[in-house]
Image 1 (cartoon, rainbow, N blue to C red):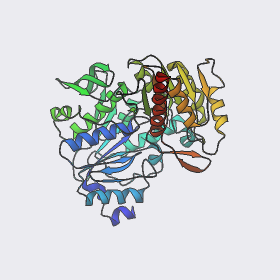
Image 2 (image 1 turned 180 degrees about the horizontal axis):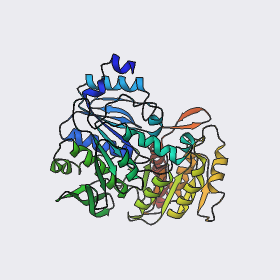
Image 3 (image 1 turned 90 degrees about the vertical axis):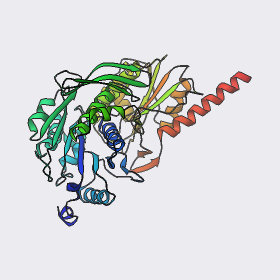
Image 4 (image 1 turned 180 degrees about the vertical axis):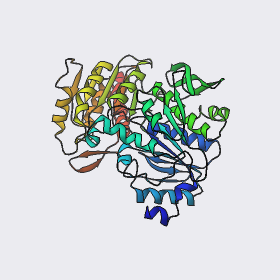
Length: 411
């Protein structure tokens, strides 16, 4: 509060969009930032991948920084003439009051499923932490403009979030009762198209982002941009040229030389892993091989659930380490696999070896999914951070695979 007053309430000098939900925060933030930038407004994005605006970027320690850091970031953005700030708002950040005194204009809710139980204890506490964001959103911001709560109508908890809100509620989803809804969705290998309905108007949407979860992310971003007066035609026209987010369904293989597809994704909750694997099922493939683990010193109850999702939705799984922290990596893998009746998996606690193994096993037209870390360029073992990037590791494995193939041809 002192910092906020000292800096003369910087958040009141911009439009601040906050996005909360178990999954989709980073992708929705990234899509919304691009829409706002493409329509000529200087926009910054803050979240899991740091802070970024034109010609400026910096890493951050938390998805939602503590209040002192946050207000300073806002002030820096005001100095850079930023008009819109799009930020991820984590449930832990909300529980710890990190966004207090931030003047939000738009609050977006993506979805709700199991995560962070190591911090919140119960699903009810986790839900309440997210609900707080909507409860505290005022009907108008400090400049007297109408505030909006943008809610995923299809989520089972939608009514709870709508009830919390004093601001104007707008809903989105695939259900026709939503204010913004999608119909006629069609997925091709590396793009998605659908019809966007708003009131009595229909707009055809084409996007290079893949999968049903990205339809939700797109709808949330469309509703948020539209709530700020940007015409839907302008929004829709800019969707085809969106870049995907680093480490979110990122294709790291090269179609010109690789005969397999390798995808790196941040999916690290049961829900996001299942959605990612189900999306892969829509893409033409021979087999799906997945590589993932579960973090140490974090919610252990999701370990067997994620392992079951892996073996059910993949042809083969290589279970490996994902930031084991101070736990024994082998024990984490055993907790994942103890209750499995399927046998289409192996374990390798060395993440580099696991990725190489999966890529070596792959045959023509297989898809290899490396999940859990996405954009992260480190692995936490014990209390130390070691440099490690799934994307770099996968590219090295692909190069070796191609060399072996060529050698075989000449033998």
